[in-house]
Amino acid sequence: MDDLKIAYQQLFPAVARYVAKRGGTLEEAKDVFHDALLVYYEKSVDQRGAIRQDVAAYTFGVARHLWHKRYREHLRQVSLDRLMADFEGMDPVDFAEEPVPAAGRIVRVLQAAGEKCMRLLTAFYYEKLDMGELATRFGFSGTRSATVQKFKCLQKVKQVVKEKSLQYEDFVA
Amino acid sequence: MKTSLRNLQWVEDGLLHQAAPDEQTLFEAKLLLDAALREDCRWQRKTYTAIREYGRTQFRRQLEDLHRELFSAPQHRSFRGRVMAFFGR
Image 1 (cartoon, one colour):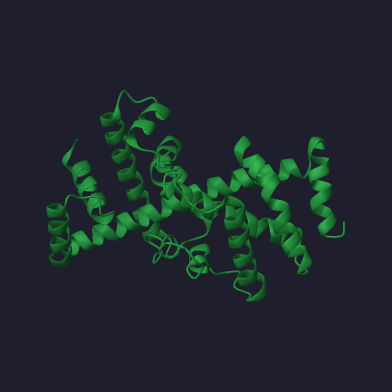
Image 2 (image 1 turned 180 degrees about the vertical axis):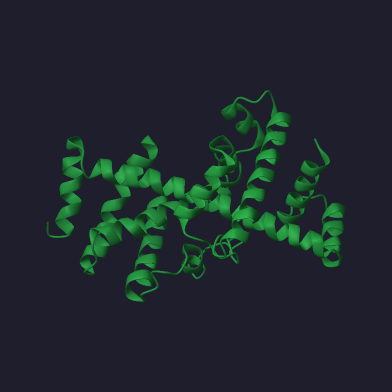
């Protein structure tokens, strides 16, 4: 959190200045900046910290790209993955073909699978921790029991996704 | 590990291209021939998408909390002033 706070303080002013100069608002600057940090974060965990781009230049470039797409080309309802598809240096995103429902609904529905399971699965699939790191963070005796627990949670969440998708057409449709 | 969990792992390895070459070929061949497996893979993909969106939501919440702190806590007054000046406030 502290590293993130330092990065925020260092990087946000340049994005805010860019957006303000073009008649945008603080809210718009915040919106594209948060997504730019998210894109950078995902790229860096995908490459396990071996990301070559400079964080300042990269996040500024992404924020600028997103601001133009969302507020100049009026593509506000388009998903982040789709907006990023034509950004230079962007890797193709796994499962990008899957339509994505509203974030609030996903969180509410997945909480039904249990908070511990969701924290475990997010740590593995989103933060990309390896099994050893997962075992340490969640207090498992070793990688084997962490693996078993991860698949138990995946099975549970898969069942919830299946039930809710059948119930609500727009849930991970 | 139970058979159902082993199957889940087998599908995951195939979908994420983490299987050994022979297993990957077998997975892809089965995928072509087995409609039930294709359906199962569809649900597993949706599950990964949902988990990723959950992770993104958590990350965005963290950023919202940080933004709120930086734009309200007294110790960040100079940062706030610097940013607000761009917007003529």
